[in-house]
Every structure is written in C-alpha cells, then in structure tokens.
Image 1 (tube, rainbow, N blue to C red):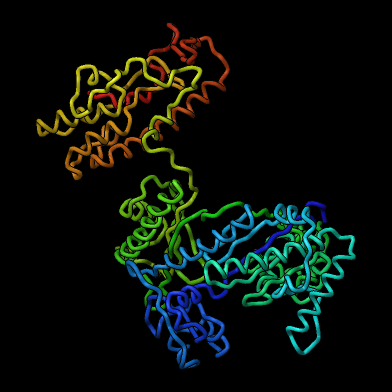
Image 2: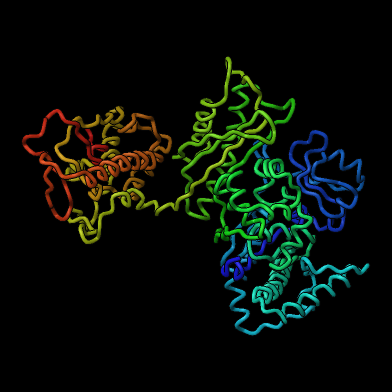
Length: 603
C-alpha cells in the first residue's frame, strides 16, 4: 500500500435513526418509546422510512407498513411525514442535517455531505496538528470506541470493549506503524466531535474511522447506536474474512452479482487470490484494477470538500394498482414533482447563489430499475421544469392514444451540474467583459447622470445594440397599442467580430426601473424568438438568447483562430481587438455571420 494511503485518516459520521431523532426532539414525550416515521401514503398505515431502536427490539423493520408495525408492536408511535403537493416534505430533516454539518465543520475543513444524515471527513490535516501537540490518549478518552480485530470473549460486553481498547492502545504505542498512532488520535477527535453534536443538536451518531471512504462506511455500522469503530490497516484481512462481497460499496448491484457468479466467491477475503491481470480480463481494465485494489483495502476516492448536494431532485413510486397508465396521470405527477424541485431550487439559490444546467427525468415500468433522459435546463420555475420534463418523457415513453403501453411505477425529476450564479446586475455584461487592458470599464460616451429609461432621449434611442432599446420600443408601441416588432436576423454582415467585443449593454437596474413602473403581468414579444414574455422575465429571457448566440460565436471565433491564414482573409488590428474583413476578391455569396449586436437591433 502506498505511503499516501497509510497517511490518510477518513471518517464517516452516520446519524442514528435520524428521522426518529428529529421527531423526538420536536416531541420529547416520544423519547424512549417505540417509534416509526411513515410516509404520507396512509394505505395500510403508510410506508415506514425510519424505525428507532426501541421499535426494532420489538421486531419492527423498515420493510413493514404501519399496520404491520402496529400488529408487531401495539405500543409503537407512528409519526407521519408532512406532505406538500401529495409528496413527502422532508424539509425539517434536511434543516436538522445542516445543524449537524455546522458542528462537524468545527473539527474539520474537509467535509463531504453524503446524504441528509451522513458525512465523510478527511481528518488527516487535523490529526497532524493534534500530533504536533503531543496529545495523550487513554481508555477514558475512548468510552464508545471499538477496534476491528481486537475482540474480547468476556461475557460483559462493556468490560470486554474496554479491555480490547487497552490492548489496541498498547499495541499502537509500541508499534513502528505511524498510521496506528494517527488512528488513536483520530479516535479521540471523533469522540469529542460526537459529544459536541449531541451537546449542540441533541442528536446521537455513530462513526467509522479508517484510511478510505469505503472502509470507513463498512465499519461504521458494526457497532450502533452512539458508538464508533476503528479499522487498523493490519486488521483489514480480519474484517474481510466474514464480509460478504455485496456489502461493499459499488458491489451491491449488478457488478457484485456478476462478480459472485463469475468468480464463484461469497466473501471479500476470496477476492484477493485473483491477480490483477485476471480481474482486468474478466471485468475490463478500470473495474479490474479497482477490484484488485479494494481486495487489499485500497481505494483512492478522495473526500470532496462539499457541504451542498451536487443535485436536487425528488421522485415517487407507484407500485401495483397505483401505477400511472395515462398521459394525463404522468402530466399531473410531473407537475407535482416539478413544483417541489422549483421550491427547493429557489431556496438553494438564496443560500448558495447557484443555478443548475441539467435536467434529468427518470421513469420505470418496475420498482428497482429505472431509465433516464437528460436535457438542458434554462428556466427554474415550476411550469418550465414540468414542460421540459414532459418533452423529454414524451420522446421516451411509448404511448397509444394517450395511454401508456407499459404502466409507469416510478417517476423522478433531478437537476444538477450547478454553476455559480453571477451578480444579477452584471450577469449580461459579464458575457462580454473585455480585458481591462483593452477596454476601459467606464463607457466614454455615458453621461454623468443617465437618462431614465422610462424617459427616452434621442441619444438613447440611437443605441441599437442595447437591451434597453427593446424596452424603449415597447414603451412607444404600448402607447400605440402595438407590440414591438420582431427583429429579423441580419442576412449579411461584412465582418466577423471576435468574442471580446463589448456591445453597449444597459444595466439591469435601468431595465428594472422601467419594468417596476409597468404592470407586472404585461407581456411583449421577444425580439429574437417572438415568444410572449412578461416584462419582469424579459431580461432573463434575453439573457438566455445572448448565451446561446455567444456559444455560437465562441465556436466560430475558435474556428477562425485555429484555421490556417488564407489569402481571402486579412487580419486588422483595431484598438487591440482582432477583426477580420473580407478582401475584395471574396465571393459575395459566401456565408455571412451576424454579430451579437444584431439581436437587439430594432427594425
């Protein structure tokens, strides 16, 4: 194992029966009583999504319905998840999860939130700082710690745990293995972190401490609740002796099934006997190398410093008779899912100032398997998300006279590929921001006090490239009860402008100063596509067209820069901006490219 693998200290924090703990904090009378959290669907008591340990002791499991749980444990308390738009609303659990993350961040800067109730931590740097301070660790510091491979046969479990930890501490202090000493320090840190989580939020959690994410997750569940487990590198073989292959992350699905079938193995310890060449031959290069490494406890996946999710989505199952059979039913639930996604996107944008670019719809004719289709996402309101999702689904789901040929049992909407959202006042201008060395930031022709856009002047009307000119045109036409005329694309242009051109663009404050004085529901035709758009959304709508045109121009400019110089094109250096003009002998019927400014030229 490489030295950098030995140096890493990775932990997983996993909240104990988290939904149940949140409900208990809301209603303290539930503490110590059998409790299960059930979904909004009340058929047969609702589907159980969380069970506390008191209920588990009575035989209640997550696979049961509420009525089954009542029959098994008459004293059980069933708490229903609130619902919005016929969907479960788990906002209070997400918010509680954020509280936990805030505490974890007090101990480590490398935190990756894996789910509502789980987070990975890379404690390597934090442990280094602790070890520089000559930290002393004793059994009293590790009151809920278990160590894999140091098992006691004593009947008293707590006494046996204490003796095992003592043995481990003694072995680590006399060992030449630096990683063992680092694990000891990390164990004390996790004890302190978990105590802080309990103190500041009221929630208990369990932890796994190892040298990579896969192993820390594997051992986290060995001792629960409110406990933590440590895996020394020398005890990986001990863990693998009884660890089923399909318990390992990434091996619980098809790859695990194929692995067990092809190799005829059951436990992870059996995988080590296969060479890397054999595994690559049977499972291709990438999978083969990964299998070879994980069989030896090696995995190189890093802990990403990420406190916010990569994607936002929601889904719903429709088992048995509840399956969706018509286009109308699909449309209804797509609208419900889109509504939830839109609300969460709005909140996410306020908190994290980002917007997604991709839309993914998922569907399935059977529970457990799903198909997906991905598209571009440009608008974030419920109606637009639903419309785009239906467009993707209509291309993929077989229908006959608005009836699904195969009923749908699963439907989901997910958005991702987030990018930071720039300051809205500068969002359009940033598309065309030139180098500060080339173009001064202040416009030389701009007056000290700008003319209000609601009171157009002769000079302002002449600025053909500005978004504001659209609103001026609208204001004039509104008085005449006529919508602004649709701009026709220019048929020809005598030059190809490089993308560092800086067209005159009105600040969004100017536009909003006019819009705010108008009826919020007033609509106008988009000068590019002709669609009817409300004034409040016109700036965003035009911004989208600019982005599309900019993308085209970027591609064209790239093609021009990479192409070999020809006799028909002459480069002209004007104010440090590169422009290309046609030579006299150019064929006049050659293809022309319009500039971005043509978008907003009013005819």
